[in-house]
Image 1 (cartoon, rainbow, N blue to C red):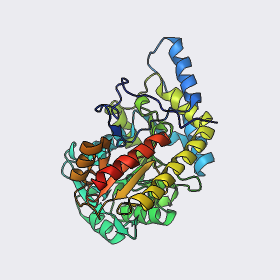
Image 2 (image 1 turned 135 degrees about the horizontal axis):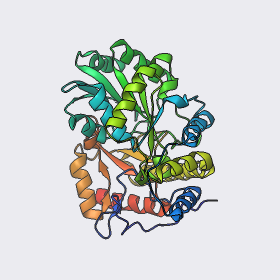
Image 3 (image 1 turned 60 degrees about the vertical axis):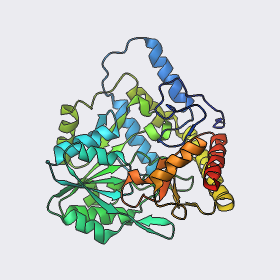
Image 4 (image 1 turned 180 degrees about the vertical axis):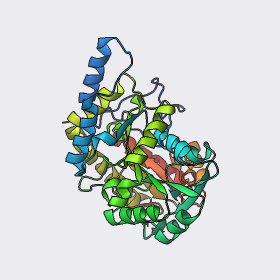
Length: 383
């Protein structure tokens, strides 16, 4: 029904991803080269045609859309009274770092992980405490013993947790999430769960909301939710913090409001409501298309580039490529690939400890781009 093979020229649109040299192919930053669901575009055009773009309130429809989506899609009952609008997930995380911790305290992250987490911590005068994930037989797991050592440090007060995991694509099980919640509660550490990638899973896979894993998880977390990754509307700046615990909810609500990141632009509410109420069919087709792109990469690497291994994953449109047989300096290797072929990939070193021998590839694009990117990568490796 939807044509994801169609190529959309994004040059000249002030696109961060496509602010590159002629002939280069960007497969790095996490946004899609696929137009959003037409139902969303129609609503945005309708809103734009109104012509007046004043201050916007958060209507009941916004709360209902989030609650209905998580109940229907993820079998999780959200308390609508504990949702807070925000302009983005990074603003939520940064506000929480500022308001829920004090200067020089530790914030734990499981690396390799989304590189902006580092910015949210360091830019606010807190210490990054890296706890590397365990990487065995091509897949990732949480080293619970190492995690407890980090959480038990007296200066540790906060943990930022990626669910599903970026960049590895790992979906955490209910048991794993519950164990994280147990340890965090034991040591008095609040957990921020970034779940922005939760709707982009392989067709037969489902993620587990962190807050649903156990009562301890539910009462000691700030969950970051948004339709922006799944529906490719990051530029509209629309997200939500879900904070089930009443005391913590009041602190986070105050944090977001005092930091002035809790007011929507004229399109943010309409886009989110439409995505959740009308975008389900489009999203299901998109997930199938991205999964086929993943299969293309897997088969190509196996036959054409066996020295590069695709890490097992169940979520996101970001692939984590193990290049350890070629290089342990992904920063240098990524630069060489770009210089030689124009293929722009993310180097794994920027995602913290454990990422030094990996590249991240964004496959949320027309299949022709994926094929082109693979051929460029092959030329770089053979060269």
